[in-house]
Every structure is written in structure tokens, then in C-alpha cells.
Length: 154
Image 1 (cartoon, rainbow, N blue to C red):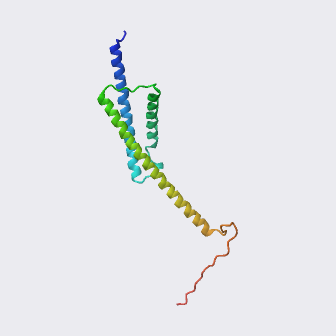
Image 2: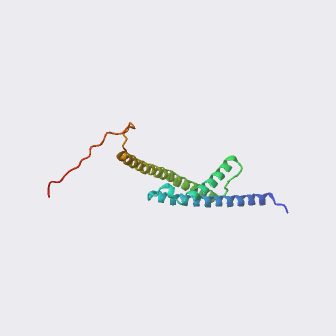
């Protein structure tokens, strides 16, 4: 049984709509994950403790692959349905806004982590300097004056 040209175009359009709807679902899921991650970052959770990272990376890789295939011409996402096209564009814009916020929040979390690490390292350096018999030159430091007081009141 052979398909007419009109039937083939209808089938291709339907397959295209299914691909677009699938892409919209992917973008919605990715946007929701990024928004959840942004909320956790806003509460001050360190980036290393976020549970969304693996899933976000997996979905982002899938999205990037689809975009690369479109750019290379191996996949076409021609959307004839105006409403579906507007939904896709709306979702892409929402994802972009969420990802921009995510980038800002991740940078802030990394900077906060670096400040915490530096504070810990400074405390360690001070602790070592306080108990070390060596000075900055590596030589034995002069004996430190020790104060010992006596109390005359009885």
C-alpha cells in the first residue's frame, strides 16, 4: 500500500508535532529542575550538595544534542502549527531565563565556597604559626616571652 503525497506530508507533520511536543516536555522538565536548583541555591545550599545536578546535566545534554542536530541539518523542527511554535518559543525563553539565573547563583555559590575554604585555610595557618617553633625564615624563632603573674591577695 503506497501513501499519497498528501498523506506523507500529513504523516511527516504529525511526526514533527510529536517531536516538538516531546521537546517542549523536555524543556519544561529541565526548566523545573533548574528552578528547583535555583531555589536551593538561594537558600544557601552549596552547589556540591544539590540533588538536581545529574538529572539537569542529562537533560541538558539531550537538549544540546537536539539543537546540534538541528544546526547540522540532520533533524528538522519545522513547526507548521502556529500555537505549537509559540509554545516552543515561550518554553525556550523561560529556559533561558532560568539558566541565566542558575549561572549567576552557581557563581555566587562557588565564590561563597571559596571564601569558606580560604577562612578555614587561614585559621589552619594561624594555628600552625601559633604552635610552631620556627619563624617565617625557617629558623628557630627566638624564645617567646612568657608572662607569669602572681597574686598577692590572699
